[in-house]
Image (cartoon, rainbow, N blue to C red; front, side, top):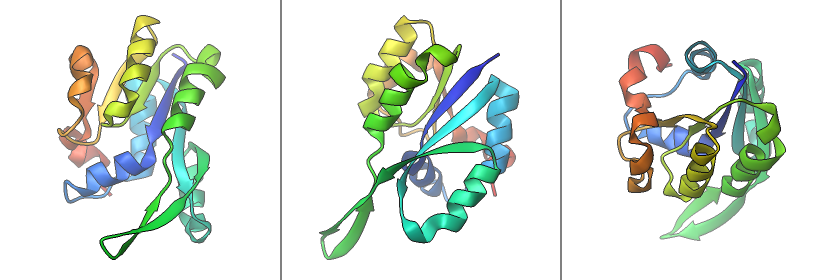
Length: 159
């Protein structure tokens, strides 16, 4: 198998954090390889210069990082940092990397990716949707048989 994973890192991180635990990225990378034959795992992430140690750890765990510049803004008196990676994830999975893999594993619970899932499914290239928790978009309903929630894998993936 030559399957690729396309991971919305912010969605994964916040989804797992909402469950009260933290993911072990090295274990997660091995899980993707052993369970789904993922030879390349692209992690789409906002770039913050002070997070270099984290980026190095993720690369050592076997992820290919695709960086997006971040934006910072204030909301309700709190500073919010956002690196919206949706366009990059869609571009890589549906165009740039598309001819190089057999099937895609998409890691998100964000309904913004419904059009991508539809496209990949129609082309018989959608292997699995890994949703960080049970609160994934209702737009995933047509692919219910391909959705796996990571909350079920806490014992295997927890840091």
